[in-house]
Image 1 (cartoon, rainbow over the protein chains, first blue to last red):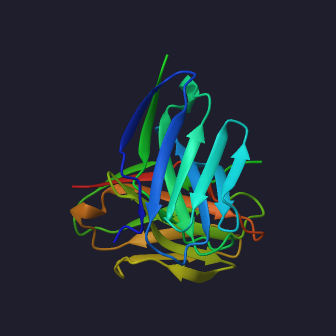
Image 2: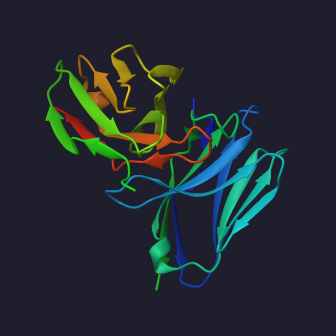
Image 3: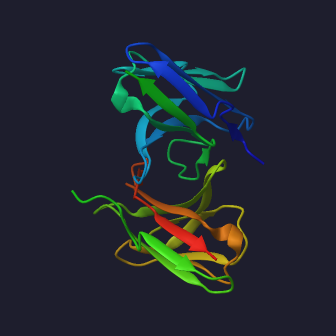
Length: 113
Length: 112
């Protein structure tokens, strides 16, 4: 049973434009949300996180928005750069120090020059 | 600081065999987690160890097991391999302060 869903398997965006990645979850116990980025032949690397007490967290070009009532979060990348081409995974856990993460299936982002 | 190291990187086994994968966490990290990644399924949590104790376990059959040593290095074992066990197995470590996981490059297992 997939508790975290990324319904768009792929996204293509032009360089300089905004990339918006979406993620939905079903478990109301989830309290901490993360985004990971993965290049081929490498392990996932942490990108940004958000606690349920916030509705927005920003780090440079990356912003994560959380809508708890809709059980939905999104990642905005502005502006998109060719180096952002990767697979992005949304993940959730019951708390910040709970290492049992539930991951989505991932969204492959391709940034076109 | 060296990252998370997983060995072997690639391996091929046949059905019914068993396999052991190894993970060396980042120095100072006491938590080690294991995940299975298959196409279209994302990463599925296998188990997490902290100070040699299994702290959490995912929904995998008993054929999947793991352990952690006193130096925080961890191993996972899969017995009686099935074709569906073909996957990328990722290990991640974290400091006891909580927060993000640091992943290794993974061990890609192919079961024939």
